[in-house]
Length: 322
Image 1 (spheres, rainbow, N blue to C red):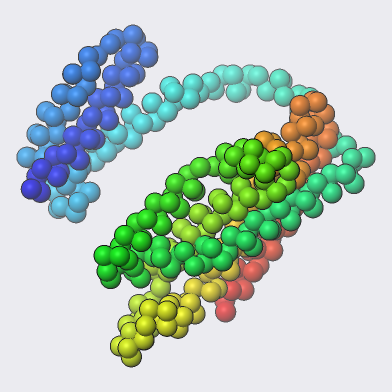
Image 2: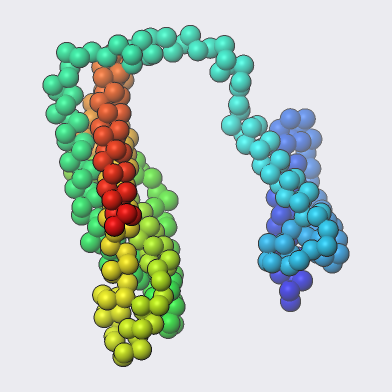
């Protein structure tokens, strides 16, 4: 059974390698490798490596190998991945080095911002800050409660707990994988263009992201106090209240402040699709090629993010030291 598991994983590695080679051969040289060959060829190296006990799969599952062949296999995967990425992304070092002049007007605008527009820009910036703040604050109670159900060490004691853990983890992963700008598009259609749509987009994304951060913090707590409280006959809620919460409050606050920092930056992006705030203004100025106004907006956003970074870093340091 063990060898079958290793063989399946090893086959997956070599299927990836052969698929990359076949795609590169077609892309670069127009050599067309039949699909049956792509699916069949990986069986040979996978079987040889598994039954000779040299496979990368065995190393991943903790086997002690007598040879270092798995290192060459890993190196092949990494090299092919880099080459694939280079070709797919169409990296053009020469264009990067020689065509910087195309950005002349943009760079001039950024480094010579139009300060006459400062007052209306500040109004939009304040809207962005409070948009991000509200999204973060409203996400905290939902993420706080759900993070307990998404912590494996708390929910791994019963079948119902395991199902709940998997369900919440899956939903939060899906919601987190959908970028805030996509949520902004959805909510702009739902509630109309404006800061409320942007706030809802960041709110949904923040809940999913904080569930991950909060639950992982719970999974890393000291289990000793929980076992001591459990031994007294305490119920689940009492265990959470007295054994878990005291250990997580400081990290939770640090994560929350950091999330607010992230939301301020993301609020600029959701504004591009109608989510309000300074992002909407940035999009309008960019469409009119008003690069000096764009430069002013960029410097204002950078200033706010810098201030928040200093502030959040100070808070986190105080929390850790205490």
